[in-house]
Every structure is written in structure tokens, then in C-alpha cells.
Image (cartoon, rainbow, N blue to C red; front, side):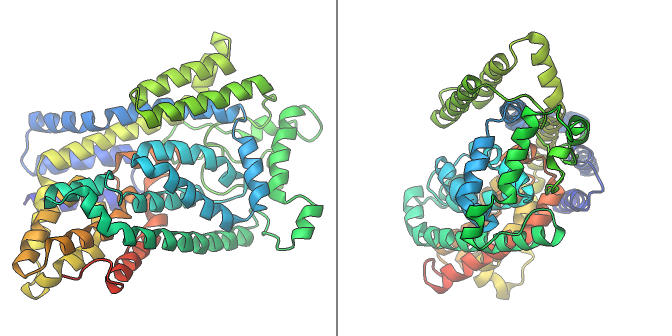
Length: 501
């Protein structure tokens, strides 16, 4: 009964989110509470479930709110514009090169295995570039998520640690067997980035949202690419906001948003951007003004030091991340807006998206707490395996590995490894399948999809930073992620990197 109700809750919520028929906050609260009531739990018990779930995401929610405000102020000050201009010059506006750079940057940043800190570094740094070139922010999420999934094979990664705890195998020993798979995955990741970049390049050219990449180097040297021109147009708009042709920039380029992170915050139709539209639903996710005055050099340098100090705090783990961003936001406000009135105006300008996204994370805590503490996830994992025909038992680990990514939408990472993996290992072991084969198959098939699941708290942080919608992210990323995970699993088996049985 718990399995059926849990399955109904997850399928209903996921389907409605994908179809865009329900707001995330509504789906993450009403549907699991209804399911718990149908399962016979009392309101007191549901309240306890909620408390447990809320405690698991509270730090993420607080960090999210202050991180969005912090990076919003940095973006408004134009801190990332030089990075955009440099990257455009290095890549010559090449969408494919930017996609490859995205996966490599995410891989390096995720060496610490912390998903939240990786998203906090990668998304604010690259999102302005994606916007300027007309690239979809959902592609940024997809590439970063796949890269982080590959790096999660490290022994201090969450999935490997959980698998080691269940199997009793030392995580470092488990990782040694995964090193060839990880190298293979990194190579395939670059290939996937190239293919996705070519697809994105065709999409941009077809919609006329950005210039096609020129192949003639001499022609590019003689005239700047349109992508570079966009950056310069933004800077010109900042310097000469009152000049001819820019009188309506502030009204046209900057929109308002009081909804969730999926709401469009700006249309990007101001005269500073009249040559091309930007991709995605949130071109002005930070709420930055294209007609804002130029930031003094000393302030830019101070902002850069603040960002580097913030990243150092996140990596060193000297302070809790929420406190670090509270201090960072306070410093950013004092540096960029010395007057108290201006500080409050800056918070109001960017607070809508931050508060809405923080509310969604808290609602996700309600969902996680009810599904986990009620036993629905554990029951669902156990019963899903038990209904398989006996003829499939020797191949059970391969089947679970093949469907590892879809299962990530139904089960949390904890449920996948602490509930499903032991059941699969026990049943497959009766058929003579070794523990190592089971662990590797389940791990490799699942690990790429970690950051597509609504159960991943760090994903909600990424969605808030990128201004994206969970349903659209799943629709955009599900098929490429699943294909990638299956290809990695099949090649690893075929090349003998992981055993069949």
C-alpha cells in the first residue's frame, strides 16, 4: 500500500511539473501531504515528517537566498562582463567550444564533491556568457550536471560513499575499479558536449537569436563577432544611457518578477539588445540594468576580491556556507551601495527571485521529509524489485543500472543506495552475481542522473541561480542524460572495465 501511494505521489507530482500544470510549491506540499493522509498517517505524524525534511534543506534554502542576492549585486556591478568578453574572444563566439569549456570547468570545480559549491561557482560565472550568446540556460544546467555526475565517482562523492557503506567495500578500493570508467566517461563527456554544442548552434542559427559562428579566422579578425558586439553594446549602454536610441532601455530591458524561478524576469528587448534576443526564459535573471552607470575600477577589484574570498570560504569550509554568504552579501552591499537607502533598494530589486526560490527549497523539504520518513521510498524500492520474473534475476543489476536514471526521478539518492541497492545485491547474489558487479552496475547507471532529480537539494539551488524551472529542466535533460549513462554503462561492460557478474 505504501509503495502504491508513494508511486502515485511521485508520478503525479513529476508529471504535473513536467507538463507545467502545477507550481513547484503547490506540488511539493499538497501532493505528498495528501498521499500521507491517504496512507493513514495523522497530522501530528505528518508534522514530524515535515520537521525532519525541513531540517535537511534549511541550510540550502538560507544559502540560496543570500547567494542569489550576492551574485545579483556582483552581476549588476558588471563584475562578470570582462569574463564574458575574454571568453568570447578566446572562443570567437564558438558555441561548441563554450560547451566543452563548461564541462571541463564543472569537472574541476567538483573535485571537492560538493554539488552546491560547484553550482555556485559555475552558474554565476557562465550564465552571463550563455545569455549574451543566445544559448539556453538549460544547456548550462545539463552540461554542469553531467560533468558533476562523472566526478561523483570519486571516493568522497556522495553516491560512492553510500555504495561503499552498503557493500562494506572501502570507498577508495571501490573507486580504483572505477578509474577506467571515469576516464572513459570524461572522454565521452567532451564528445557529448561537442554534439550538444552543435545542436545548440543549429538552434540559435535557426531562430535567428544569435549569429552563426564564422569559420573564417581572417574575417573574424577584421570585424568583431556579434557576440563581442553585444558585450560592448551593454557597456556603451551603461556609459551613454541618455544618448539617442537608448531612452527606453530601462523600461524595455528590465522586467519584474514576483513568481518562482521559472518566471521571465526580463524580455531583453531594450535598445542595448535590439540586435538579437537572448535564449532561455530568464535573460535578466539577476535583474541587472543595462543602463546602469559604469562601475569604478576600485570597486570592480574589491568585488573580485569578495568573490574570490567567498569561494575560498566555501572550499575551505571554515564557515558554514549560509553564514559565509550572509557576510559576503553584507560586504557587497556596503561596497556597491554605501547609502542605506540604496542597499534596501538593491535587496528589493533582486529579492523576489531569491525569496521565491528559497520557498521552493523549503517546500522540497516537505516533500523529502514525508516521502522518506513515512517509509514510502523504502517500500517502493523493495516492492519494485520483488515483482520481477525469476528469469530476470541474474540480470537484475544490469536492469537496475539501465533504468538507473529514470529511477532517480522516483527515488532519492539515499533510497537508491540504502534501500534499493541492498535488495538488488541480495537477490542477484542468490543467482551467483558478485557484489562488485552489482555495485558497479547500479552506481554507473545511476550516478549521471543525480542532478536531474527533484530529490537533490543542490539542484534547487542551481535552478534558482539559473532562473530555470524544474519541469523544463527534466524535459530538456532527461533524454541526453539517460543516453549518456546507458552508453557509459554498455561501453564499460563491453570493454571489461566492470564485471558482468
